[in-house]
Length: 86
Image (cartoon, rainbow, N blue to C red; front, side, top):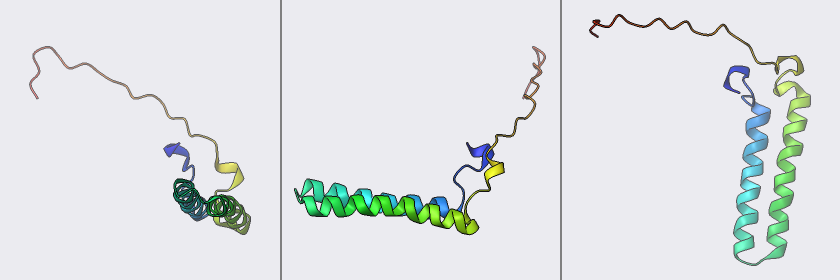
């Protein structure tokens, strides 16, 4: 994924950050046995996805055609002679 810049956009970072905060909120309220807080956290998680999609539609996401992986030729490895010193 690193070769295709998957997720290295402001839209992706913002959406994931908001969703992570919502996940933490929902988890904390689940431990405290507060259903309303848990569902509020889940709404924040969904809000992260919506914000990410809105930012992508505004042009802050990865262009649609750039998702393909770039293939490179494999590296050629040549063995060292038996008596070679490093």
